[in-house]
Length: 336
Image (cartoon, rainbow, N blue to C red; front, top):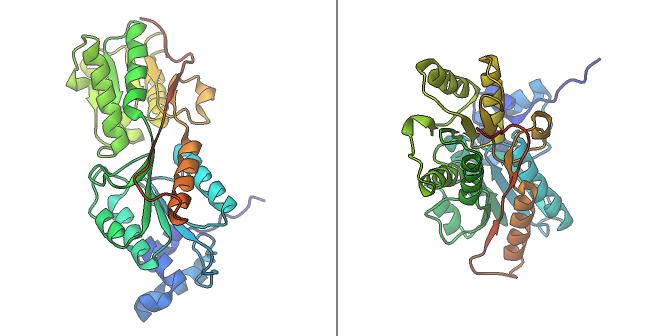
């Protein structure tokens, strides 16, 4: 008999007709919401049998530091690895961690940040949905220690961060494709507006320009892509006869979806079209994807170490840790 899956906070929110942030607010301190809302949430919790494992209980020992981590998509293996680096390091320092999954939704991220303001944790690790935010100033004004992990908010130049050099990572993978003869390289972006996406696209453009290759806008899909739009973009180009000999997916899931779409169109990878990705997630070995390796766990670990230094007053000034990506060459790319 298969094990029954435990309901999550989003299912409770849907059942109660409120937001996930409101659910977490009720579970921590029902007195800060209306009695009617609290009863709706409690009824949904009871009906679904939800167990509140991720929210720090109100009775937590006040001598124990509490931090919040707001990440774009904890189901994505990349951010799961970042989260692993955060929580393992936090546990070593006896720090309680509240985990928030913004699901790459700016409105949900803002709800969580608003909740974090009322919660007043000792620190926040934030990987923002977009490079712009209206909430970050309020967080900083509340004197909450903040570290950016992987993604940043560009205007918040006083906030310390742990990032990877995404510009250079994209530049190097495109340069590699150029060196093996590719000139027409399709760019499939991920989350438009995220700082990592901006850096990877700029790296792509610069590598082409530096090698005397025209940047063809019809070969750039910059909008936020999901499975359907990856398929649509590739099929559109193939159906209209626009030529490309290689595909660069700005993250590994996008690249793998591109491989599937090309295969469905009876095109061989890499004999007909080469494919490269970004991230070097744990599953890419299976499809022999050439990609850019990013030290995701180390991003989380270093972010937590830096936040701990801020909380314990070992550092007070701006800190920046830039980790270097590296190319991992597998069999998904071939010379033209």
